[in-house]
Image 1 (tube, rainbow, N blue to C red):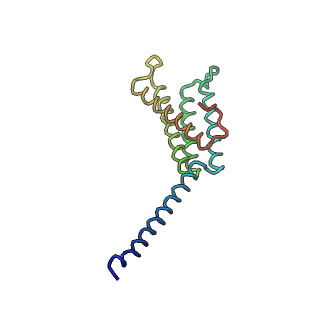
Image 2: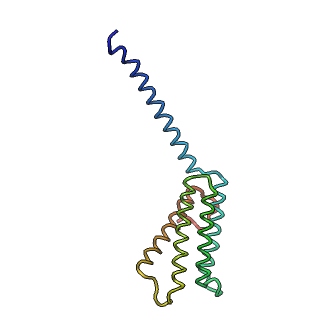
Length: 163
């Protein structure tokens, strides 16, 4: 027997092992991606309840009648509670991608609530400061971009038409 004859069976075993490991890894990745893009109905029900709650809070925020709806402290409280609810929703879902997006959504609502609280302490004439405008844009991006991501994973039950 020559040295090359002895090495060939080991080479075959090595190549076969690499193929098996790669196949197993690919299967795990595909299963995880499928789980993230098709979350369980229970997870989507949580997202859909939060979306409905968002609609109610947004409608109250844009109300033109009634002093309570336009009171800055109630606006702060409204979005602070929404942030807490989104964070609780993130803790309740089993899908990692939904959990991550719900936490981002909560961050956006929290930032918006913070801006509302800061606005309470300033005279109305002052308006938004440059740093606050950047924060307002960030809050909007976190809220609306994340809502779009959530809608992609859980398309039913959204109160707003898709952009």
